[in-house]
Image (tube, rainbow, N blue to C red; front, side, top):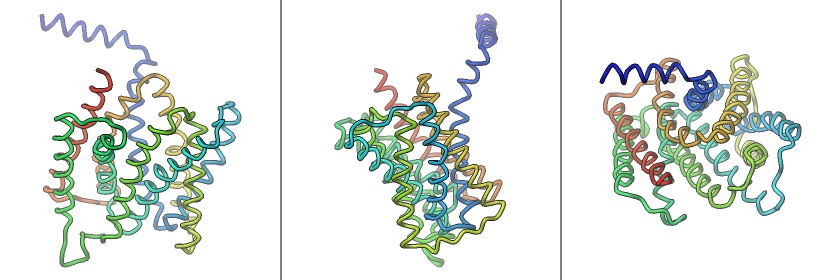
Length: 316
């Protein structure tokens, strides 16, 4: 019986076509690409202030994305109200999220810890979905929320250093900015689900980037010197963030949605914090003590429980 099952598994594997294997690998590739965004921030921020950096990134992305939408004849929103809703979503999902993450890393927040904090987005979204969208949490999701909070408390507690500033290597402004990023992407996700379900991915993303770019431009004008050190490292980092993160990752997401694989992307997002932490350890020697590592594992487990329960409920 066991050998027959093994033969059936081998036979099934052999029948898989290259396109099917490529589709199976696409969600993993998306998560790997997404996790490099935090590493890109760490690489590029020594050469430009956060809002200036992000403004340049948004403008360069739009120089590619808008012509792409025109060439592909992508439809644009036909109602002014939808343009407004998409712009608000852009200010939250990209403006507050990217701005908060980059500002926090700029002020000393480790890239792995920033990824873990904003990785709580499914937990916060699930907690807010009840009062805002009328969605109820089941028992497993509530357990996941509690585990997520307990885990992040362990992580932050492992970085606590009363004799220094507030946390080892960074202070309260960095923590507050990353928490703003978490709130921005969580509220923005709910807002987009409520008001922007009819937007096309490419044209809608272009509008979101335009709104976020305007927000970053104002921030750079009011708060920064806007000086940029155009070193090879900064140029390569900027090119990676524009071409790979803002363009390729979006195209990959569109392909996954078209193939009906968006749920797999959502279920794999909990891999972003450990993948980012591994990259940050290898590249920047960022380390967490064992209570922090335990807290990261508990937090990821909590996110998995919430995401998996949400998917099971949507498929029921």
